[in-house]
Structure formats: structure tokens, C-alpha cells
Image (tube, rainbow, N blue to C red):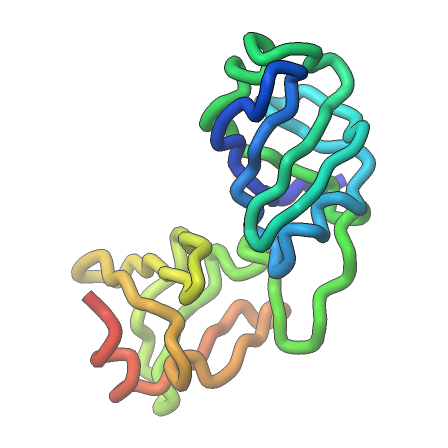
Length: 164
């Protein structure tokens, strides 16, 4: 079963072992529908929680106090793809975009997506033959995404405005 990164543990919350997460999903509350998560390769059952915007506070089975929660600080949180809610039309999980070719509308290849940093406007890192290029997925930059074909088409003029 494929696991996808869904959050990062930011810090312990309180003294009863709750953890604060920065959630990568469109809605931080979506993580509350997942029954089990993986942190550092270890499975944790979600006992309960609450979400506010892009943050979630979770209680995990086996994490009983602040000291145990502290050991999870900074670690990536994964979930089984099958346990995640379906995405709306036109939305994609980051894992599905990694490795895709980025091309201009005229077919000229820019490079390959190596990482995406979730933010209000996601930041893509692309490796080309010559260098590493970073760009913000601002409005009008990405024209279309073909996950099955492994291709992201971008508007050349807009891309050049937002890349660095």
C-alpha cells in the first residue's frame, strides 16, 4: 500500500501527549478522518483531535505524555493513500506530481519536479539540465496537469515572472 506524506509534527501540545501538526492536505480537518498514521515508520492509531485551518492537534495511542510527544517533533507524518479522502477535480497529491516533467505550452521542456513545498501558493522545485529552478504555483502559471502522462504544462511568460 502506498503511503503519502500528509503532515509534519510541529511540537507537543499540552501535557497529555497531544501533538500539533502542520497538515499538507487542502483542509487540515481531513486528517481527522484517517484512523492510523505513520510517524518515523511506526504506526499510530488516531484517538481523537481537532483542526484549525492548516493545523491539527491529535491524540495518538501510545503517546501518553509531553515527553513522548516531544520525541516526534519535526518528523514527517504519513498515511495510506486508501485512507485519505478523495480529492476534488483538478487537485493532486504532492507525491503524484514528483517526477513529472514541466514543459512550456510550446512543448519546450523546463525540467523535472523534485520537490513541492506546501504553502498558500505551493513552491515547486524543478531540476533542469542546467540548474535548479524554483517557482510559485501562482495563478495562471500552471495550465494543466496530466499525472498519468507525467506532465505539467506551464505558461512560459507567467512562469518566468514567478521563478527564481
